[in-house]
Length: 363
Image 1 (tube, rainbow, N blue to C red):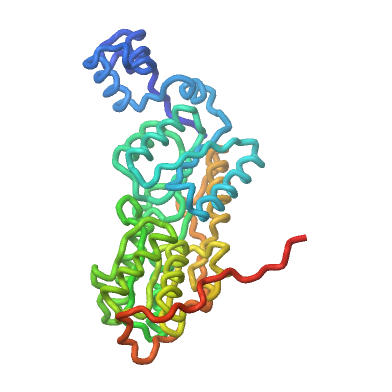
Image 2 (cartoon, rainbow, N blue to C red):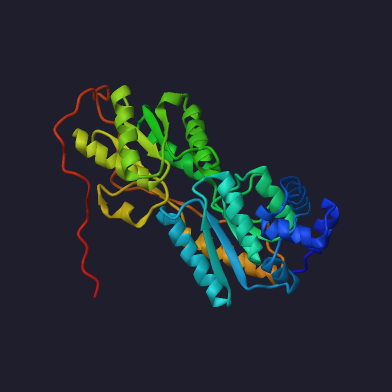
């Protein structure tokens, strides 16, 4: 795919009003350059979108046969599955994948993305549509093609492969509403810098409002995605609001924590309390009770992101957006609202803890 001419080092030197050697030194050995000079060079680099060193050589030759993927975290199994499928797709085409994570930190995301571009990647795969203005400017200046994943770009400006978080969240909320639940809480990941988490909370609230049911802020808890945090979050919710009969979790990891807390409090799931997740990780179907959740085709997202980028690099036209289907997986962790639902101040005797189902050994 043809690219417009990239800024060169002499362009940076001219813009900063310094010699070519000074510009080079300010970029490669900034500690040896006067701060005022270094700042002028850095401003010129940012303004021109200059990509230094080996990346410039790679861009000049048009191909490095590497692609970069930037994910929020390596702790979440959904990103591992998607990245593995992406890597497999690229390897089959003779490309190498470079991987970086940013822990939901916009500054870190900009830094690792810049590092990948400076290494000369031919394209990038990013997660979500919620990115800083600085990253958006850098991507526009670097002229490196990229695919957004796990979401559909609401503005329609960028290539993306993902699913409707709105539809998935509304369907889950409606499922619980249809079971008679009215006292519903939400355990969410942090919504700052995470459009997926933010959209899921908003659409659960929308679905409840459609039935005339409010979702007070006190019933929405944002926390880190971990089993321990999920358990602690539900504990706090139930202690302050014992009328709750169900919780919708922003992912299955939080939901597993919620199941553990229910077991510790003596709440039978789903007879006393319903728990729903999101993602359908492998463990979701193996715990007891099996987790009701939304199945996201994680591997499909990674595969299609790779295929779409490769097609674009080959000069082929690719649809701006590609939506993958999601599926509501109705399992044993959700059930009808319990009779006489106003209860639950103190703990009851613990029920059997969450356990994984026995599996036949692989041969």
